[in-house]
Image (tube, rainbow, N blue to C red; front, side):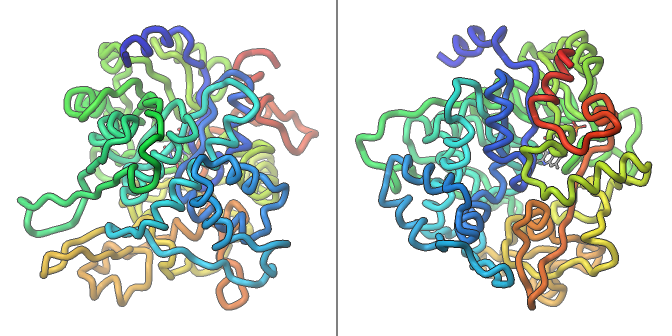
Length: 469
Ligand SMILES: Cc1cc2nc3c(=O)[nH]c(=O)nc-3n(C[C@H](O)[C@H](O)[C@H](O)COP(=O)(O)O)c2cc1C
């Protein structure tokens, strides 16, 4: 059935994928604007539970969250979320956001339900009013929220799941099983001295939906890769069908695959595209491909098309605050925009691209851990699980077995990225500073925007890429 779907869709795959950008940068508005134009719009699934409850605490301007909650097929679950988090008129602007419990292996039923509802909401809104394709992007490194998040997205009929930031061997099979409403188990990465012990996290759709729930569509699964070896490993060893690849160059925004040697990229870090092509699955090229020439080159290399991030991150529909977008455009024009590949910043240990902006100049990186998406799971001596983040407060991190070297230069991505979309936590009366991730290639800007204008819409990126502008 899946093969049929693949072959019948092969020619109908969109040429352009708007890359998933967390947290909340590729939101439902951006994904919908892209999908409406017949290309693949992708919402970021990262931290969507927190994004939803912060939108609700901000009073849900425009009523979109409430509209989507009203469409959730299990009203009691949606109602519970609304009652717990919605603030009519919004919280006071200097009031801190109320927090949900951090992700853990022993997630409560209501925390799972919040993830399901939040992912449903984002995909539902992105899919509303057109019949284009919508995908969801998740990071393999963030494991604990993954299964309920995917299930929520599937309840909204998500068409594609895209995962990067690791080796998602257990996801294709999980999609197969969840589509049948069967329980799923996924292997957890746990730091432990006992290498024989296997840790898992599990999810049972039946805990949340009724026995009469119809089976769900199994979305296509695309993996983000930077090497043909990883592509082959996934095809051979994943527990279900991988349906395509995004081959990402290390100039892309967000996290990058680590270089093979040391902390500098070389020729060996450029993926052998022809070897991925030999696998016979559809693929897209990403990273510095945002031009008609980039698209043509990708197609000449056998790709269906390109995945583009930065050009969409900068457009009107993206979740990044207007102030930050305007500053980035202005800095680019002035020649002062510096994109740094930071090998230390991310708690994941992966290289992370970031830019300095006014709002985070000269202030200390925040060291509080209250969102916890990027915490490392470790086995304590008694065999139970503990959680630590190298970007969190130092003392507890070290007392939980972390090392000073691991903590060096770390940034709190969770809080910093939420501040970038205007949802920064208030601590002692001050908003947490943003942390902005960005791609190296900005050559798209001048052809799309010219010298006079200060902003552009997602549709203009598509027109430019397709040579229509
Ligand atoms: C602001 C921003 C956030 C990103 N976040 C993610 C993410 O959460 N997950 C992911 O797989 N890729 C992420 N990416 C990478 C994009 O999906 C895309 O592959 C990449 O940006 C393509 O390169 P380009 O920026 O040169 O177009 C991000 C990129 C940007 C610019």
